[in-house]
Length: 352
Image (cartoon, rainbow, N blue to C red; front, top):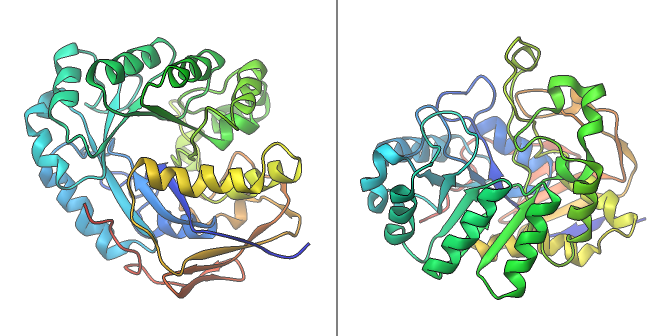
């Protein structure tokens, strides 16, 4: 089969570990991993150390991204109860606001109604509010979308009850969207036996019924495929207190293209999920003269081939239908023969 030409993919959920976790990933290595996977634009999450919940922290991360990014990068602001009065200042530096209703590290978990009200009342209406919401917290997010009449995007939906609730909300015309990750589509709780801590992430892997429900709603309810790229070193993952999270930027396209060849979704639908919808939902800029050439040659995913600084993937040993051969970003070849060839600083920080 001949190469398949795709637009530059957009991943709206990544953890680039800057600041505070640069030994796991940084803007240079994370954006290289993105390009190696056919992703030309990524959005970075705010639960860093310190978190991106003040204008100073966001400005510093913005400057670091300008110096180091190989693909285009946008940054989320984090809703922090301690910094909630600074939300209007944050808005000028971020592409969207992230609210954590469930488990997260650091001071970004929101558990009080006044903070939620402040987020929905003061965050600019032309910028998205995204939520880490699991199980009954999804109902909270849907309720807020209804009360305030503004869009809410749900991150890494992983459970049957969650996707069905979002489907119900969409049927009633509520302004909600959602994403699912490849690891929640291609793995379930039975994979813990072989992966151990390498299969631990948040949300945790679901049941086979949960996975089946995500696939059943992939062509109607799901809006985006997002990786939740959350790298940790192998030493950290095999420690006595392993942190949750797995890398995903380099493997998502190969896995989803495999699903296309299995008739689980069409190529057009893949482009909607990994390019058109992410761009529309977050009002992201175009990338002119940008494309991904995907070579349909069966390829086994291997740890040693990973560009990410963490150097491993839970999909090690899995065969995909192909691999990224070439990536052109704004007319410049940035990946050739599967190798990232552009330098840090080539990427643009998304203007906000």
